[in-house]
Length: 114
Length: 116
Image (cartoon, rainbow over all chains, first blue to last red; front, side, top):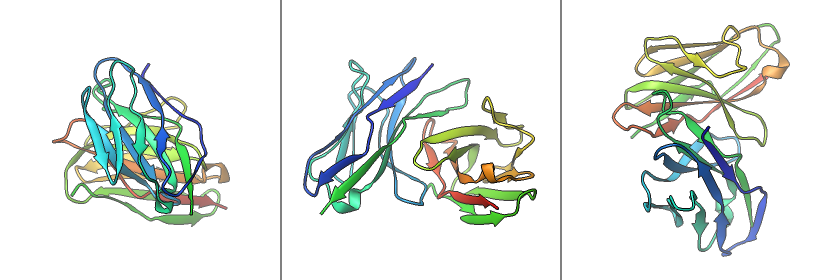
């Protein structure tokens, strides 16, 4: 079945460091890919998305490119801030029996130190 | 646009009682809503998928008689935890799919349930 594999956390970085959080997937067909962010005690917020191969999603300095050849959707940011500290989830969505279910990765906790 | 609300945000109930959580899509029609459960420091676990006007489809291992889901309108779904026990304490998150956008789900802010 479809699955998402996300790098283990926690990831601890200093402010202004470069961030990469790896995400790979297995899926039939052509899923849409998402990155969500969750701050403590809150729900999920969509960070960025890509719906087809070679699409690049970007938002708030974060980027991820849908790579079909490597089945990856790695999240990157050139210079992280303390306010980026949160848990990041990679997810895919495709039609499964018509339900459009999401498959989530396990989440990666990011801590940015001042 | 595409805002989903949940009520209540936090609830504490006694063991054996039932509690209802509401999920509303505020500015769009949601043909499908999803209910997730999240344990501390873990990912989201899909509990069930509900389609407006029909019975919910539960994931394997989720007790449908314990977690009652109703999706009576295109903007409202409810999750009722019946005869709650301390092990039901968790963070419950709903999401809604906009009928005009094929794949994207919009998430509510979550409900923290504590059963004493």
